[in-house]
Length: 161
Image (cartoon, rainbow, N blue to C red; front, side, top):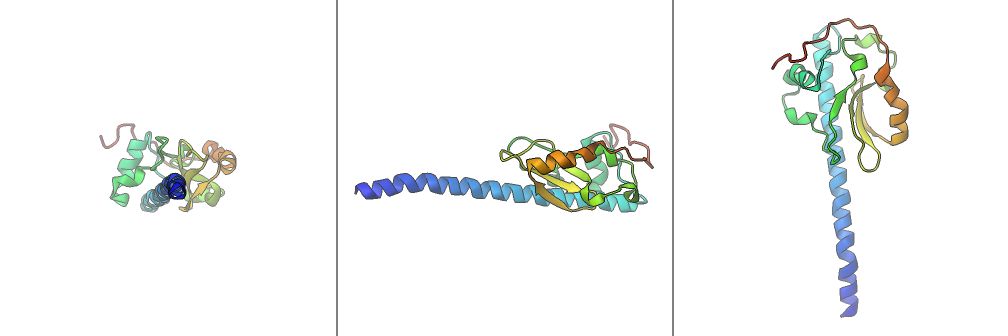
């Protein structure tokens, strides 16, 4: 009887931990899928506007102008329990795709807060999305400060509202 209680006492927390890890894995996968869908929407918008990335003044404006290409507003949710949200790299706002020197290394969307393990969901100007660790974030966040020549004027702050 004591053996059975000991097994129950140990296995319940292990099972709970396993469920939490699986839930976090699912949330991270959903966050990654959302980043990918939002990125595709931004790229579709860009193709329709002579290869110029949108030039929003707020996340809400970005979501509004890209909305017809995304259709599902829930793609803008990161699923990060830290209360994070996706942000657009304003360094590429109003810039043509060919003007970005390394699109596969230039952030397009990123979570503004890290997950509890230090990782973030990001997407790049070429459209791919992935999860990155803290060291990679430290290196790649420098693309948020790129100085690129803009081809478009900014959309009004309250555009669409």
